[in-house]
Image (tube, rainbow, N blue to C red; front, top):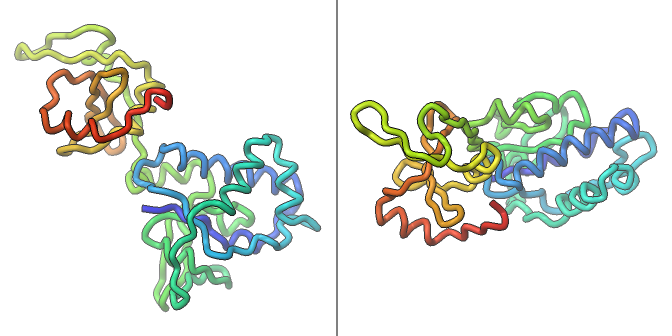
Length: 252
């Protein structure tokens, strides 16, 4: 699936420079979370072809005047790259637009089965879904304009939450439990395990990943929640498939 940058918010005006900087900072954080791999079902962020960002976003201020006021230089560079250098959605000129709050957007229509990311430039973008009309039919589109919205769409976005099973998979040792079975160890701390879980690949209905020459399996406990362990008994076919992925230790 894709996450489309909603072009509609750029036609609204925020109340002040301070509000605009705050809203852009939140928008940047959401987009970075997507591109950091936190939402594993999202392949990439796309933008509308020939998007118009030239309007006033705060009294007397256009985008180019607001961005330098964002505190982080990295975030300043990121937002400019985000709006200019991502793939443009392959929108046909005849695509029926999504009609919302008296405005129209073809990229929202294109992403109606996926998700849009919205700068919260107006209260109309504060909800976790946007209700409008497309092809003369009522249409609700998943929306991300605040961090808490991701929890509303966790399964659809592929968000995975690591939960250490300290009663079964403890660090650095094997444990025997009922029936003479042995529970494998988990030698990663929670932060490292979460990072690896985000990169794990689905093979035969289980998530697998590699780090430091070891193979890890992640098992689902509940929707979006997983525990993990070192797996020394991975089938040969799984090992062969894992070898096809670039497990770059520098980013794990």
